[in-house]
Image (cartoon, rainbow, N blue to C red; front, top):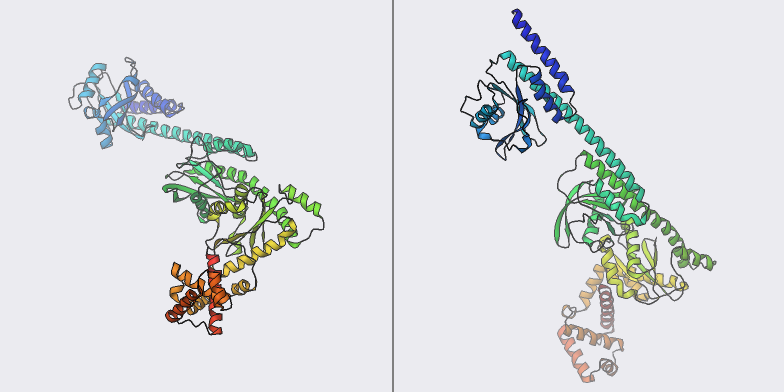
Length: 586
């Protein structure tokens, strides 16, 4: 190697070292581009330098940074060149440097040629960068000389080394920017979480809490509190379906919140709300292992790491907000169970103490009362959230109410001084239906004028539900003074009862048509009158000859023998069973 060649290499290394220090002074990617274009001209033979991007949608090659001491034109107003008239597209397509010995004399790229002539540069080298700008557009770095120069292999390697230095610097800047942004996000998450948690114990701060949660959650959202049946959302960004108010959540949404208990966190599902299908990501809300609600995100994209952290922080704040209601419910439940247990046992040794205890539950024992007893097929079907929701629904529909779970049944005591509770049974059942298994039956007692009546009313409700269970009745059943016959029938298997009815009563008389009803009424009245024709005719309001004709027709058509005491007993028993069964079916 000659002395001149060695001197040239030393100069290249010196230039690279100087450029590396120059570029390393950058604080962000944009500053790196400026240092690159200025530094390469300050530490090499090149006079001009620039960085261009290719915008494929606009079809333009656009200079974003330029160093030209003789032309300080603001690039922000320059739209760029038609990419078809610029070498930028070829450089990016081939992924290799391009050397133009004289950009002002070539005709392959007219737009570039015209710019070279206007700004007075000739030899040009263009090198693709391995990074993209903030808009994800590919970039090309170029240098130019105001005279024609020979671009040696060493010079080209020097320029490629400079481009690689810039790429390393930009990647470092981007990584630092990402880290700073992540730190800002984490600080924002902690600040928003702290702010949200500070409001969770204030029952009047629901709107402020909702607004704070929107800063944590990455999309439109809605939370359902199963302990109260209420919804929580940001009024500034409401869910994609109408809500009359946050206190009344659609039954379909309540059902979806219940089902969230068995879903993994963030599971995607299609919700059917008021006939509309809505895509959502669902996460259960739990307190001490109890399922107390659900959080819905209305978006399709999967949450990234920061969004998941923010969403988890929001769920914590929501659970803390629900916790206040949940703890209050569990505390009052213990008191209500103790009070109702004493009432049903007839233990009135300290009446004033019981009245005070009821007063602490905002319940008046001196007003007329009713009981509602609800029995699910399996005692464990009603958990704490279901119990809380049913109690709050009862308070919303009927007014003051207390409740407890006793002997596998949920018992509600209602204050009903105006005797209007029976008219609201349908509304109450419609609200709590999402929580109830299909086979659930419930009964409302007659009014109790004094608390001493409650043990008797509870016994009537329990016996009624026991008969209803044997009859397969669900929903509201009518309380009856259950005597020996219904109690006896409650112990019979329904399949055997149905078979007995079919064997005694002709099939044509089992229907609901008028002819069948008249026939059974005639038989029933005749048997209940002791088979005395005149008395039965008077009860039916018909002539005795008409009665005899009807009975003769029934005997001939269906083989019924009204002279055989055993056959008549079977008929009487079957008709009683049928009437009892119908009373529970309706």
